[in-house]
Amino acid sequence: MSFSCDLSAHRQKSAAQDAPDSSLLSYTDAEAEQHAAEVGARPRPMETKNEINAAGAFVRQPNAFTAPAGEGEGEWKPEANRYRLYWAKGCNWSNRPAIAIELLGLSDIISNILVTPSGQSNTYGWGFADQKDHKDPATGAYFLSQFYQNARPDFQGRATTPTLVDVREKKAVNNDYHRLTNYLEVQFRLFQPKDAPDLYPKAFRKEIDELNDWLFPHINNGHYRMAFCQSLEAYQEAYDDFYDSMDKLDKRLASNRFLFGDYVTDSDIRFFVTLVRWDISYFRNIGPVKHRIVDYPHIWPYAKELYAIPAFRHATYFHDLSLGHDNKEEELFADWNTRIANQIDFAKLWDDSDIRAERASLSADPDHKFLLHPADEKPEEYITKISASKWNSPDEKDRTPGLPGNGELSVDASVNPLKGKI
Ligand SMILES: N[C@@H](CCC(=O)N[C@@H](CS)C(=O)NCC(=O)O)C(=O)O
Image (tube, rainbow, N blue to C red; front, side, top):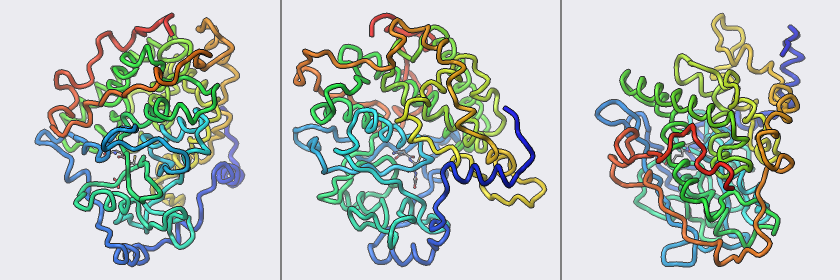
């Protein structure tokens, strides 16, 4: 990668990549305060005060809306034009369903909108700064938290992305990122085109769930465990855990094109969303970085191959992710992103042409990245109940990484237990 020194040309080019909406800057705290008073919104609680255990470790609040999709009591019925995904550019958890919806061909069935901070200080949590009158056009809401209050008036936690909202009732129905993509894959099968990819093959859901529930504490939440913890011990544990896990996955990807072999599965979406944030955004919050993503011999080409898939690329806003926190170029010690990140040509850096042939050679089906459903598949056999995630347990012990039974694998993460099977 070579850089010229023409800063203004670089800035113009990067601004064109995904220009931030200037109206964001005009949403003031006073306006947010006024909207909050109008609808009775409460200030968002701080995770660094309320979600820290006695050892100083960050223990995430359980997801509030975990009811499965389905036709049963308390479940939310899969339907077209009834649900809307609220997601955020920077949020890895919510990039997952955004990617899945596009991959599965569900974009006309489930609508979506990007949320933004509300006001400059975001006191009331996610809002709609770039929409007319700061309102979600589909529901008239000012804040994401309104859908939580409508569904559960006593809800006291943080309203988070992703949230799937029933736009008819204006109520949150699911914010369980552990299983939300699986409901889209399985319970929405009848709304997908026939040739949609099978990201969660029925015969292998146990292995995929097991890896997904391991990826959560070791990889996806790895960043937050380092970023939000309040003690050196908790930090060191999270740091070692993350980089040990990355070494294992790098080894796995040396002989597997994707995490489970020849085809992209739900687990690859989960790994990807953390990878694209590490070098450009997360590093700012976590202290010294042991290895950049670009330093991994197998993870880096793997990530580039996923980025080449439009649905992955469309949800990845590198320019927004890279924005510096204060963006004051004139300061002597302006942060790295303010000075350098805006100059990166992300399309060029992430271009996969140099690694395409090598990655494809790992597959027995090199011309296809996706598994298709068998022609004789019976929907009633494919559409089965999705397992619950232990990470949603109300008991904090069940959600503490490292305690026995929490996100353990039956085979080492460096090994693909489904090699040659999918
Ligand atoms: N649903 C999860 C996590 C999802 C999550 O943390 N999303 C972040 C964005 S990546 C969020 O929406 N934060 C907004 C807030 O806390 O106000 C939780 O309840 O902890």
